[in-house]
Image 1 (cartoon, rainbow, N blue to C red):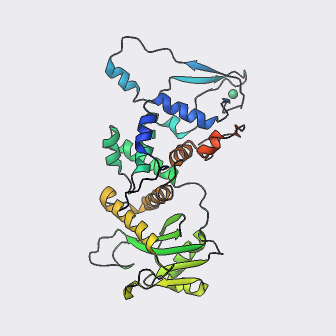
Image 2 (cartoon, rainbow, N blue to C red):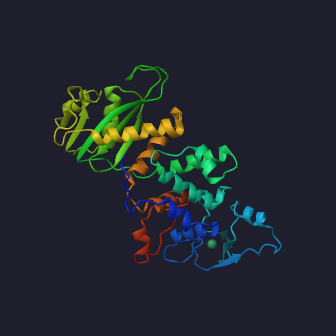
Image 3 (cartoon, rainbow, N blue to C red):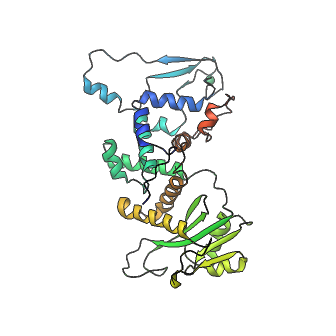
Amino acid sequence: MSKRIHPKAVSLADIFIKFTSNEECLEYIKGMRWPDGIVRCPTCGDKNVTKYERPAAPTRKTRSETRDKEKTNRRAWFYICLNKDCRQQFSPTSGTLFADSHLPLITWFHAIGLMLNAKKGISAKQLQRDLGIGGYKTAWYLNHRIREAMGTGDIPKLGGIVEIDETYIGGKARGQRGPRAGNKQVVVGIRERKGPLRFIHAADAKAITLKAVIDQHVSADVECYMTDESTSLNSVLRKTGKHQIVNHTRKEYVRGEVHTNSIESAFGLFKRGIVGQFHKVSIKHLQRYLDEFTYRFDRRDNGDAFIETVHRLCGFKPLRFADLTSDPQPETASVPF
Ligand SMILES: [Zn+2]
């Protein structure tokens, strides 16, 4: 396995060092929500707002009480809109998922860091242990909510050279392979050569189903489809006139540009994650796990992955770090979550 660490990749250590309190997380979201530094009321859009600090806590607090404060999502301050017809109270997280959650921001931020950093995924149980979360259900919710944010948004079609393969996940029948082996779920993998990856949970492995999946995810002007000889896709792809097959049964793995190595290694990593971290994945949630995996895979060298994920959870329009630090542009209305 590669030990390469890309200089721009998300560093878990950086996230844990940068965010040590709820206040720091709140400031970070504030910078995202109002990148030009001008705070606007989310209800009426008025810039005429005032900051209200909650009274300081009683001085004779014990250490454990101070620690407990970090375990709630109560904000130390908020804004009040001064428009006399509005008077809305709000904070940088108003209207976002974070405002409704009883979990402190720091727990969310550290959970995002852990999930982005875990190549093969991280289970709710592991998240619970690593972050000292009280209940398993809370950790499970956190895990799934972040996973869901990773799976939403635009999914552009793939083009150029695409490698396609299918695999079967789950099921109890031993010693059987292929679509008729027990209750196995069909997953189609499509990878643009040197580009994005898609995993799609298909209803079955019938040619008509797989064709619909391919049409949905691959651009019509694709240069070439590459598969191995065993896939049920070959009958579908043969007719396109853009199809190349690598023949594994003849011990052929790479013929020049013709190979399916990158889609096979991605499937391998996903399956090791299922076995090693999750043990089992319910059919209902399988697509979410697939989306989480491809989201992380596509951003493994991307230093903006953390900020993008927080943005998605807030429901703000995704912005890259470069966008945030370029010339301040008046922000158009934030999209409430
Ligand atoms: Zn207002």
